[in-house]
Image (tube, rainbow, N blue to C red; front, side):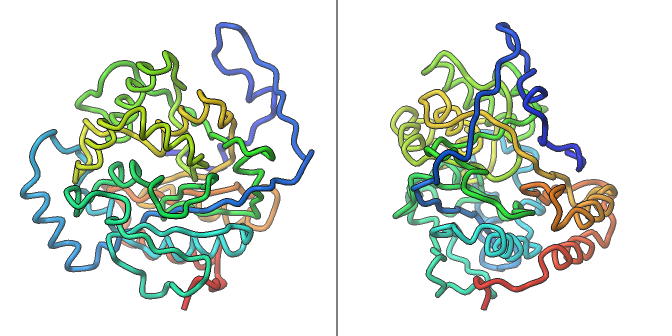
Length: 352
């Protein structure tokens, strides 16, 4: 759990003191030279756990699944629960990033009742538009993330959001991409462990291990760290190169209906490595608040974020992660709702 305000807001000196056999590297990024001339899209994935048809399909698929053992978190109900995070994330976009071109919302055909689908920036994308019929229905975010670059009319520069990630202060294109279009790849503070997946790995770690093996085989180099659990700037051309280079692996993960240790982490690791190693992105840092809303520390995090709202101390983004946690307070959902309405109280143009 990342405890705010311990974030990636660091000085250039701190940011360059990573482990490197050649010694500390000089910070060379200079910004404010030209205005970006490219458009940027945002991409969201969303599911409605309260839909009886979705739950019936999930139960049937879980009963019929075969092949690789499921990851321990694959069927956790918290993975599918909706606490209206998407509504508030879109409020953050309307308030803090009005320059976005299109917002692509990827779902299994579900549409939030409150969403204004007639707004010209909103593009609904059904899973069937990016995944083969033989892979549907899917309940595996890794499978969906392995196909996001197939979204019709997707910009070369796009940013992938989970629905529990939202902006927390005004954002500029140059918070996400350099002025000449390189993706800013936000390095995290945890290393990808060496070797193949282990039984105790989380689904994310296992999928990152598998992705790194592919990367090392092709480029003989890989970014050793996981990337920050926040929004993910992407380059369409890099994702398409990943598609061509690793087609069999991507096809396999797309057909995994639930998370397993055989998955590959595409949007959050494989694409970033391809971007970096082919000169389409740079490794950098960001300031984000990431924590589990079911933990006892969550109310303190809410207070600190609200205190910093509207100030220069506010992080660029926040991820209000929801994972099952023993001992979670019974009112965690009510506390989350109160925080969201306090931080982003004004309805957006994306709501009915």
